Image (cartoon, rainbow, N blue to C red; front, side, top):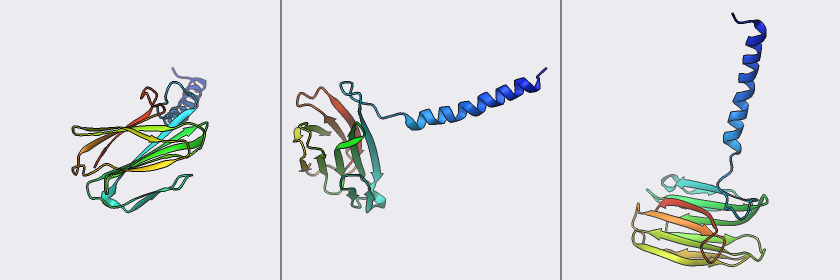
Length: 164
């Protein structure tokens, strides 16, 4: 037999559990490099068939042009809650944009792979930026982007797959 008090306890427990479970799903951060506990990444993809489109950010925003069947990507890197870098893949023209948004003496290193091709050594110095023309990647080709915090390619910040 269920008493009124036990029903109230069960309902109260269920009412508290749902927000806690939902909060855990929303607050879970992206994987961080183990060497820096205060670092996180925000990764975003867009189907460029429906572009032009704009993504806001604290630095300069990101604008993607229309490229039917293409997939755009933007990864933002934060340290202590402050934007310190971002990487963008623009399928229209197959361009990779890399920014070190904070002149803090650190640099970003990027590798890009598609098909049998691999590009190492895309380095962006502290406070700098670069645009790399990746050439003529076949439409729909999977492209892997890895971003590193060191020139030895040991401290990975994030990786992402997109389609050219």
